[in-house]
Image 1 (cartoon, rainbow, N blue to C red):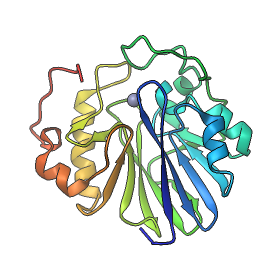
Image 2: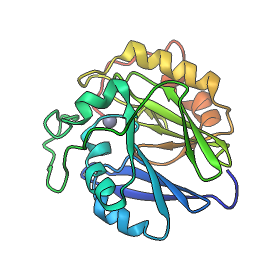
Image 3: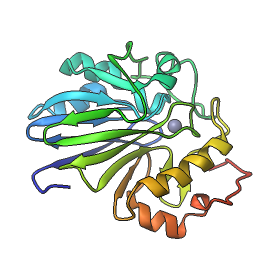
Image 4: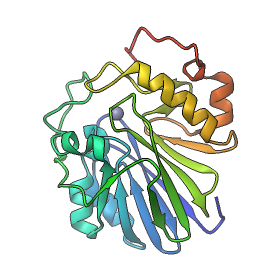
Amino acid sequence: MADKDEIRLFVVGDIQTNCYAYVSAGECLVVDPGASGARIAEALSDVKVTQVVATHRHHDHVGGVRALVEATGAPWAISADDAELAMRAMEVSSHDLSVVMGGLSNPPEPDRLLFEGDVIEVGTASFEVLAAPGHTAGGIVLLGHGSAEGVAFVGDTIFAGGCGRCDLMGGDWGKMKKTLVRLSRLIDPAVTLLCGHGPATTMGYEVATNPYMRPDAERESWSD
Ligand SMILES: [Zn+2]
């Protein structure tokens, strides 16, 4: 990632979602505003928010979209396969938790539907959309190019030492396994993975140590 670009992290909502702002040449891409959309807009008042993207449809990743796009006027985008359910995210509870939905709202209709290979531009950076089904049907990963070379937003697909649950509606462990193997081939080991929850990691470290990244990985419990 180029020195002049900047990544800001906002940890938001009831299950500590990482919302990221990628700032390049005065423009800003916001990834996964899961809550606190108005506060995120305020914190980004020194830049122009030009694009909002959700990595997948779960309420803790889209709950702040409406307030953020209303405050900034930025268009928002999500994969075509997750768009329909994203607009009902507050009714379709994503996790088996008694979540408090206060302050969150369903996002409006997306301005853009994303597909494999699409490109999102921000300043001198661009992000390639990689389809990553498994945690949800339409999960995506955003792989940085240009001045964002070396970073990827991976949502709830890869965590440091783990991967997203596949026992929720639309989840599919078989697809997740294929996604993890595909991503490990497409993304350079040196790339920093910015996860939807928890700390950042690198692809190389996860390939070497994460049991779910192995092609023969099995998973029976989804309690974490
Ligand atoms: Zn999720």
